[in-house]
Image 1 (cartoon, one colour):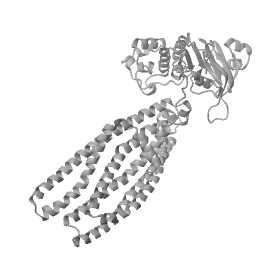
Image 2: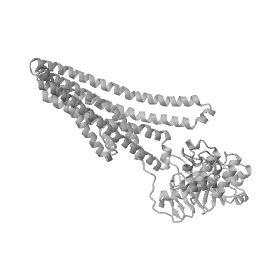
Image 3: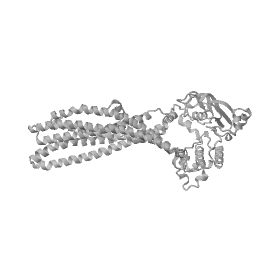
Length: 580
């Protein structure tokens, strides 16, 4: 019934409940007690009929009902304890799995984030984990409890009449074959369900994030059809599981009914010949009828197991991804911020052309270097290499003459502040967004950073000030306000290296002037790398690097490049902008 791969997955899942072995032990004891009560019920029917009803034994008339009551009370308390304990353990496991998955997502290399869609990752955490939780909270309980019940009832049946019991067991191999076949079909359909759920989540996320674009381009019906098609695919795969499950249980029950009919006939003949007392006959038939209910539950739980194992495969596929490489051990005592590219080649995975070719460049410490060039020229690639989101295909990048791969990764990134044109804010307070990731910052320092970024002027006017919750990605703020919060965050980090993906093109003049002024203050006494879009914003840079298809074609100050009358001068004189 359970193939080796399923067994491996389940064993791996059980490692998540291992720390709670004491509660698991309580669950197991409760299960054994609950299972032990089952065969006692038909066993008490024999004296109830033979001694109480037929024999009129006064002791039996008084005691048998009391025994039956005790059995039901003990069974009820045991089932309550096992259910409560198993659910507690399962939800602890779910908590740990989700925490491990979130940590894994944060530790994945940048390439993995490109390969996984956001919808797929959301589906794994929101849909797959509960499926695994069900297999942990329900499946092993049903398997252990009902297996023990079946063994207990079989023991009673064999004790009462081993010949009839063997006759009943003839259908066992047939039932096992049906369940095994159903398991394979349900596992396949469950995997397809998980894939469809990831696609549906992706469609939903795109619809929520792109609601403005959907409206402005009149694409409501187009997106509705895409969502409906994904939902329909999920429905079809769900129905595949339902069909197999729905046919599985009745088929097993029909076979059991055939066996039951045969046993009833033979048992009736034996009773007529005096081989059974009336009490033994009723007890045997009752136990035989009782055994089919745990068999039905075991058959039904197969659906939960197969969904859980398909979900476990999806979860472990993510958890088994390699973390971002962090082999470096060095830490710089007093980083100055000199960045050097030495013969760097780089090509993104699954692309045909290199992004950088034999690239050599030195960014002087505490100077401002602007990177300009058309889309695909390599500007963002250089920023990604400095942050070590990617490693060079060949060559090396150095910080203060130390190769980046020799530096401890967290230490390296602690030396870098980043201000993007696409500001990412979190549904938290303004204070938490400015001091993002740090809880040891005083309110005084946060206010100082906000003032330096010209953000305090609007923050202090808010009813809750720094305690204002700004909504999803700062939705309650204007574009200029969001940008100033991002600059305040960089001020507070006070890192020796600042990467600026310029973001003033979409702002009004007043906001742009404030942000430019804040940026000028922020650039002081640190190494600044500007990914430039507007040529007018980089005239004061200490060095301007002109890129084209991953190659450095010009560099110098604004004045020097204009005097060269080369590529930069032509673009500047034509008033063009570089696109990212």
